Image 1 (cartoon, chains in turn orange, yellow):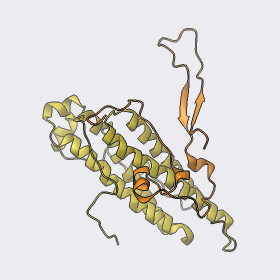
Image 2 (cartoon, chains in turn brown, blue; image 1 turned 90 degrees about the vertical axis):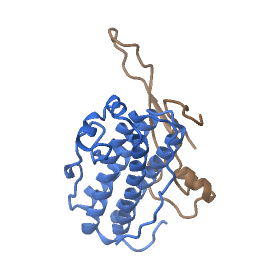
Image 3 (spheres, one colour; image 1 turned 180 degrees about the horizontal axis):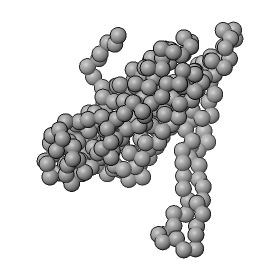
Image 4 (cartoon, chains in turn yellow, brown; image 1 turned 120 degrees about the horizontal axis):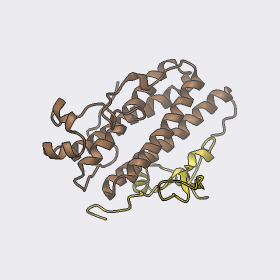
Length: 74
Length: 189
């Protein structure tokens, strides 16, 4: 599947007070590309489906934290 | 009527003592685009929507309460053992002054929940479009919350909730399509 991320470049002013962010991103999740879910789509095994939050890989949208992975298990 | 299952829809584990996140998570508890708003919005709209899509509002509205419970669990775990000093440092001092460690339906800035956050226009298309927008806003809120913590376990539960918003958004889109198509003949699904 295509990337679920889109990139755009914000305008950079000559007198911006802060270090510029070169580009910004936003997410285009798979629901935007499915007008009506067709029958018989492949399904995750149940334990994976719970983890993914959906029964269908076609609807799955991964998202990674900008804070990265820390925490106890990290 | 509802049947209650005494377990969470998805496990909530919080591995990092980070009271700060509790305050931010309140956005999804009692915020405009939070789970309480979602549940009450959908369950109220279902009475006056064409009967073909009542079930969608009923099911999703019910699931939102399961999400509300997950958020409550996160906030509770993050605050239950916090000292007054820690709560104050996390910006929850005013909350302590009002209600000790109790939670309340308020957003991340402490603004109490209001029914003015939600709408019922009585027009099925207008109502469903509001619901689609609400799901996308909740998805975005979850992204920002995931960005704000490096606790992988908390991230894991929030990622589940985010994915549910995506599925719900699609279901509302399909509901709109059902109302547009109108016919009972040839369904694409």
